[in-house]
Amino acid sequence: MINEKLTEIIASLIYRSSVELPPDVMSALEGLAAREDSPLAAELYGCIFDNLKKAKELNRPICQDTGALQFFLKAGTKFPYLDDVEDSIREGVMRATERIPLRPNVVESFSERNTGGNVGTLSPWIEWEIVKNSSDLTVEVYMAGGGCSLAGRSKVLMPLEGYAGAVKFVFDTITEWGVNACPPLIVGIGIGACAPTAAMLSKKALLRPLGSENPNQKAAETEKRIKDGLNSIGIGPLGMSGKESVLGVNVEYAAHHPATLAVGLSVGCWATRRGKITVGADGKDGIEIKEC
Image (cartoon, rainbow, N blue to C red; front, side, top):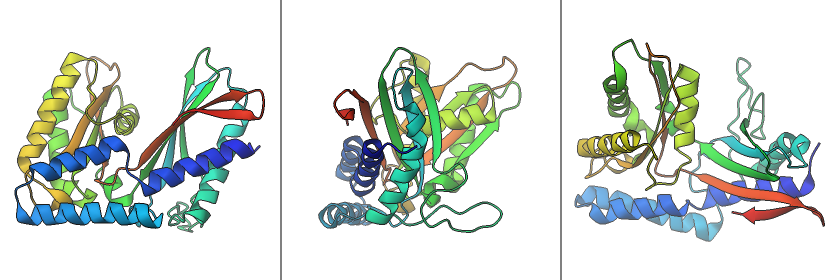
């Protein structure tokens, strides 16, 4: 069942996310550009900022690849419209596809038929997290482009490879595939018990604000060391070389089996498009926006 107000909120969230970068991503890009001393890299950053300016002025998506949409929900057990959420998200995606417009990117597996509206089998992907004793719903959208998705990897390491093996996996992947993902990159790393756990944690790591640190001291130190190491490679904007390679590195983790460690990697491009909104129940007209 479709909740009309929630559907329109979702469509507006997608619009905002496709046309304008989040403030933390914009700030990080400006910082990299200010520190750049290569004429070619400086010129490329100029092109990026010109692109962002025109997208905002013309109310058009930042990139022609508007991605495959993924949603991450924190749903309160007392939110009264839980039955409407998935249908409202799918309808919101279809409306946003037509209005903005978004490029139709969803292709059914095996038939390879483009659905035309950015919805399909289990698409958009919706990841749920239940929040006890809450009446709010927080929706985060991530627009996963083809280039940045190309670098995604997940692997269960052999016994005794440990955290050194996880770091090697990250560096091997970024040095081989990073130039294809429209750098400078946001690198999300997941550490967990199995490949799918680590993969999902790495995607959630991309949702964390740039400049934040994992509250676990060792995880925070790992973030910094990997960021410093990747920047020393000098991939630069759009892979054309430069002073730095990444906008940020975020690590999320879960407990794991004592004999093995899983590592996942998700990458966001310079145009990492994500958005977040929190709604709550309103006795007057059903739903109210509480935070965006």
